Image (tube, rainbow, N blue to C red; front, side, top):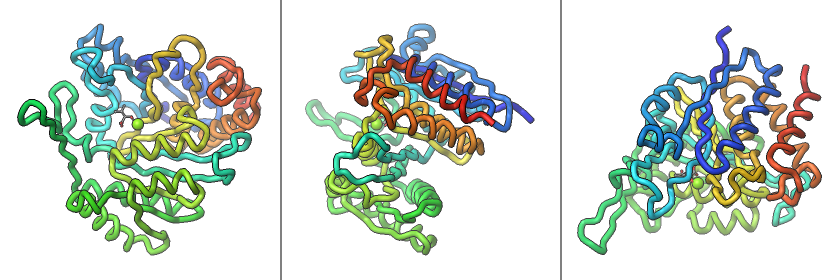
Amino acid sequence: MSPLRLLTLPGDGIGPEITEATVRILHAAAPLLSRELSISRAEIGFPALKAEGTTIPEAVTAAAQKADGVILGPVSHNAYPPVAEGGLNPSGVLRKALELYANIRPARSYDGLPPPTGQAFDLIVARENLEGFYADRNMAQGGGEFMPEPGVALAMRKITEAGSRRIAEAAFKVAQGRTKKHVTAIHKANVMRMSDGLFLDVARDVARGFPDVDYDELLVDAAAAHLVRHPQKFDVLLCTNMFGDILSDLASELSGGLGLAGSLNLGAVHAVAQAQHGSAPDIAGQDRANPTSLILSSAMLLRHLGETRAATAIEAAVTRAIAAEKTRTSDLGGALGTQAYTDILCCYLEESKP
Ligand code: IPM
Ligand code: MG
């Protein structure tokens, strides 16, 4: 059997540390895989910009296309005003080049980390990943934004029937495999009547094809409020691109922090595990970063690639470590650094070996 070929793109800031931790976890879980594991690495972000004049060289995109799966760290150049010229957004480029139209972002409460409401919850944000304000986005040239005259800036938000249909279908399929089997479409169709109107029309049409899944709709502002008040009432949130970006951060913060947020970019052919958070340059290189977001994203990638046993073991190791304060990183009230936390996860994985 051919090996499982994963490509890591560590990125900037805490990216290299959390990627290194993730690679250690993958090797520790390797005995649970159905095939040999082969992990390669390529540079994106500032190291690539310095060496090749772009934050994501074409050769890296080509390598991502050939890999079975990609593990993507955060990059730092995204600030405004831009900190460097030539800075394409690697996640935007990869999402487009690999046609990763769905971004699946689970958020749940953990034993030992009581949620703000006191009620356990378990939800998934299914985020459209290529359209909305992100469509035709090219940070170097402005993309979907322009200034028709000085002092006036316009941004275009693109919603298509085809794009809405495939993310809606993905969301309903995810819901079918869950206990609650409920999809809530998130929108602002009272203001964006045409674009979110189209999104809702398609969501309703797709809902008719899934009679076993409950369906309702919620305005995005109300959804934010309801999420804070009673996250346990949600199951799958079907979102356009930017609403999903925002609500997924909100949901993961309720679960304990952005450092816990798994995220998988999915297309018909390719899949990219991605840390949901940014590059946190303020704590880079200090062994303080919580690598869980990228580790859980990689577990999602393994599950997607059919490696259920390894994925389940990694998730169980994380759940076990987070349950006790003494095995947590500092963002979650513990005292462990990135490496010591990773050591613990590796020990737990070792114990689950066949
Ligand atoms: C995310 C990030 C990206 C996004 C940024 C880095 C462009 O916030 O993956 O959630 O907005 O999609
Ligand atoms: Mg985001």
